[in-house]
Amino acid sequence: MCSSDLAPDASVRAAATNELGILAMTSDADPASVPTRIKSAGHWFAQAATQGSAEAIENLVVLFLFFGAHHSDAEIARALRALEAGVGRPGGTRRDGGGRRG
Image (cartoon, rainbow, N blue to C red):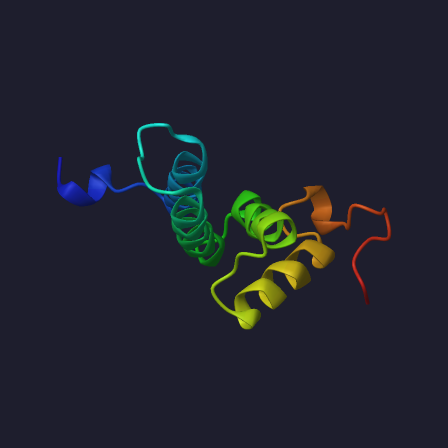
């Protein structure tokens, strides 16, 4: 078995990276201050979002809405557009039931 046989596929990597963000936010093992943990979580969520994790996109938006945290305006704009477009939802439909925009 070669090392490439052990490499996770992109969706597994994205999910694992998103989990690192969740751990950064929720783990008591990290003695860092809350603002530092939020910044760390944002880093992992942004990385997972670029890897294709819909959950990470949602997590980025939550960090922005509740904590005002984001790395860049472009990053949060991409996340908001992806949510509006229904990324990660069955059939790619928006949550409001409006479907994809034509």
